[in-house]
Length: 330
Length: 291
Image (cartoon, rainbow over all chains, first blue to last red; front, top):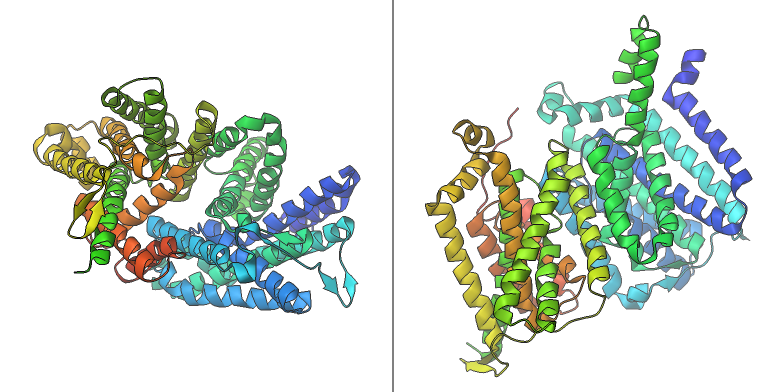
């Protein structure tokens, strides 16, 4: 029982649930709620993106594109064609999944820098289509979006949104952790280590890579749809190359191959700009410097670095329990 | 050949020459360090903006240009020293994020040192258009093409005939072997950032009289140079030049004959097609992966 609680799957998810449940005690006004909801939505994207970047070792610099397909797809269907928001969200997510599936095979044959470039191009093309097709999307000015309603009940209160997003984040984390501990997760880690090696032991590398690409696209698209309906307005600013980079930075900053790292990365980097406004004219410079600095000094990310520190101390205290360490290192 | 076609061709060639210079910068850094320097576009911006502000103080263009190039080269050297060198051995994505962080930092710095306005730069030798085969050419376009040609020749001399150039080339082929024959590869890495920053700055100065310059001009020019480098084959000098020219012409032709709204998207679609069907580009090294 104790050992199950200490595992990231059970214990970690429980800890996250406690944090989500207790956080509203510190949220004194609707602005704080809004930031917390944005953190949650970015964290959902990052949990999916971490499966792709952290576990499967495949770079994507274009996930803001999938976020944009979810946001604009749902916004257009619901606001321009009067679809019920839930149906439009599901349709947009299906569209993102289909695109990821179709583009996944050719794009994931590429590796390293070349994969980075191809995903970057994909993301920017989606951005350009969104800004150019202004009859549907409102162009660079963006468009307003109808609020989310479930069975005739409109979701407009920040507090209600907070619990919805919190529950979805927990579900996303739980799904990701389960996947990582399943045969699929082991296959992903194997092909991260060596693709040829993984194929030799019978893993269909291409199929697994496409699968995780589609899953990460679905997470990003869902978060995009929710973001559009929550904010009631969407602009192409959320689909830019820079937003793709921010998402990737959240994953790397939190710690690659760490699901909770992705959540921490999303939390820190989403709230950071809110603090940086005190720097006024220096804001952009400071943001760039923070990006560079954390990557230079914490290339492994925050959570794994802390884990290592913690594990180091624990090992020093109890050198006779090597089992725990080998379990974690797997 | 219709006059319209000729006009598109000449415009494409001018833009393509600028892309080629930026692409050469990408390739030189990629060869030396296997880093894709996403801050390459900022060197273009620094070159243009520094020239504008130096000439505004009354300095003649002939003095302002070398000074601006020197400023950009210093920024390039500092980038290598303080951001890339300390992160040696980091993963591809970490290095990408570092250089993007650097580009955001430099853009932020530019808004403080200068401003967020568009700035014109005076043409090097007047604005009287020259008529050529039914198409009109600005004298500045001739400057762009001439200087680019001179730089390409100078670079091929540098890499083919000088000891330092050969050392840089050797490092790009095999870092360890280069080190074993006594080449200071860290020195080579350092210099490659200075050299490609200078190239970017020259591109920024040449294009400023035609297209204006501002603190964020590097975003799009950097991206196009990057596409050109991929098109030609990342790391290939000939490829960078051919990729730049091909991209410039393809872009103006498609803007003229197809759709000007999707002019920028066409560059990216070309890049995706190249990556899908010939991932090493037109002139890139074809190498298998070692297991």
